[in-house]
Length: 281
Image 1 (cartoon, rainbow, N blue to C red):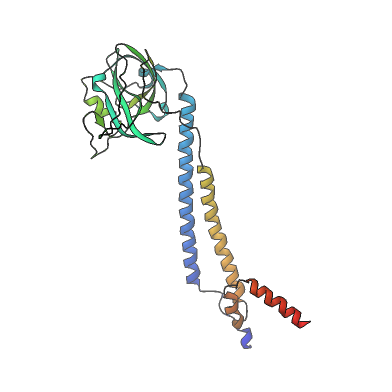
Image 2 (cartoon, rainbow, N blue to C red):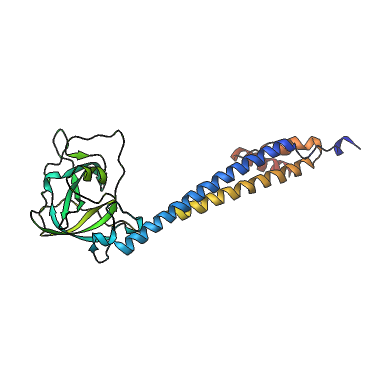
């Protein structure tokens, strides 16, 4: 057998095993990221469905939605309820670090005692930061006095934030259980109510948050992209393996040149080639 007919092994199996392992790990990571995007899409779709079904539904007594004081079901998010009773204005609170339309501010919480004596924490809306040193709102609208009928939408209570404190009259989150615990009354602890309307109406009112957007976003597109990345990783590995096999099939003296990166042609190379052809005539 001549020297030009000597062949090298296709490749080292350990090196390609390592490449395969890295590709598998990358593909698994892509799969997990795709699954995460699918899960986010499912959560968003469920939230959109709740908004569609509950946001403009006919209001019902709060006891029909929350059979127990600590009850809460995510499917009841945005359900409209009707409350009749009076505001406990002396126990009003401001929730810190609330954003509306990109601007920081507060939300006004006022406990509402129904005619049966149970208390519902009511969010009356958003107030911008004030001009004072403490940034408190320049004016905090008072809720209506006396008997009031409130139509509101239910939201799930927020968790307590460990280690977070706030000045008197303020709280760091809508931790309904802590608010109710400070009142001399029985109250709902699993949810609070966001005002939609009051009768009689008070003027002025804090700003109301807009209706949630029913948009699934880009989660489906991102999920498919991650799947494509994982598949392309195996396609790239297979292409590299095939190329290595073709190069290994060449004579030994040609393999180094075949593996060398292709030199990019610039304008000077093109001009030289043209001149060479002209000289050859």
